[in-house]
Amino acid sequence: MSKIVVITGVNSGIGRAAAYKFAELDYEVVMACRRMERSRQVQEEIIQVTNNRQVHLMHVDMSSFCSIQEFCKDYKARFNKLDILIHNTAYFNHGAQHQLNADNIELTFATNVVGPYLMNEWLRDALSRAGEPVILHASSNIVKHFFDPKKNLQFEHLKGEWSASEPFSVYKQYCESKMALVMLTFYLAEKYKEDGIRVNALQINGARMSPETLNKFTLKWRLAARAQNLFFPPPEKMAKCYVDICTSPRFRDVTGSLMNDKLETMVRAEQEPSALQAG
Ligand SMILES: NC(=O)c1ccc[n+]([C@@H]2O[C@H](COP(=O)([O-])OP(=O)(O)OC[C@H]3O[C@@H](n4cnc5c(N)ncnc54)[C@H](OP(=O)(O)O)[C@@H]3O)[C@@H](O)[C@H]2O)c1
Image (cartoon, rainbow, N blue to C red; front, side):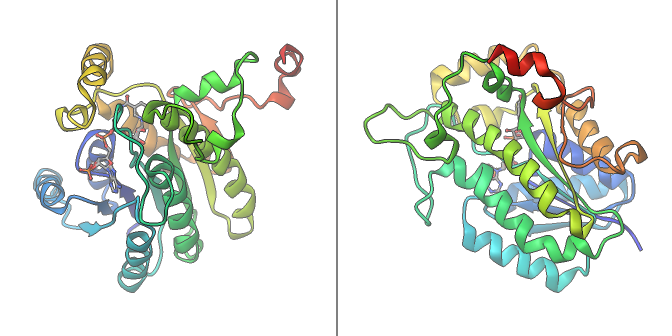
């Protein structure tokens, strides 16, 4: 029986490149996407180029809990098990105004943290029916700032809360959400051990962004991101990390790990006493 991978947010960037790679490896690929028209074009391209006809497209809006619930229900009606679940989607419309989702959760947190949590919970039974199930969360090297001993941690922000008296910034909220996603990785890795589901996170440190992604930013942020793009590697580099973390025998027993783009596990503070002393 073929192995099945679900990847969220697959119509551009790293998600799209990862879907290509898994299709080339003969996986059954489920593209979990919001904008269906654009995503259908990508699905057709992948099928044509890789000659893998088992590339499916299913609708999900990761900011809508109702949509995630529908997706999980539909997925389980169509497929018996799930081998790999990759949370690639993220909301990072830098410069945008503060927005809530339909459940009154700030949009960055709803999309980047609560959405993946709910999908993991609602697909846990399908994952537990696979041989060596694995979940991967796409985090960012932005989390390194949290390890600066001088950083003033604001725990409300880490829960996605923002007081009305402070100026709101999607960028800051994005940083907090990527740290919360790492914390969620550690929590779920422990919780899912009894089902044999591994949960890891990748610290992505830059991948060339598509014009569509840049167009979601306000002008100031778009100009800065265009300049950054000149130095960023193509998305295929990070897509290869997705594939390696989820499929390589080297990581068969690895769970609760935050990895960098060299696939090294970031060292925990208790294993690095000097880091604790610095605080
Ligand atoms: N590129 C970098 O330099 C970089 C650096 C650090 C971390 N990362 C992380 O890497 C991951 C991929 O980034 P990328 O650069 O490849 O970005 P991207 O090309 O913009 O891909 C994000 C995908 O998510 C989809 N998406 C956004 N909101 C969604 C929602 N509510 N429901 C479903 N799909 C949604 C987008 O599609 P639509 O908007 O069309 O629906 C798009 O396909 C993200 O988690 C990002 O935070 C990237």
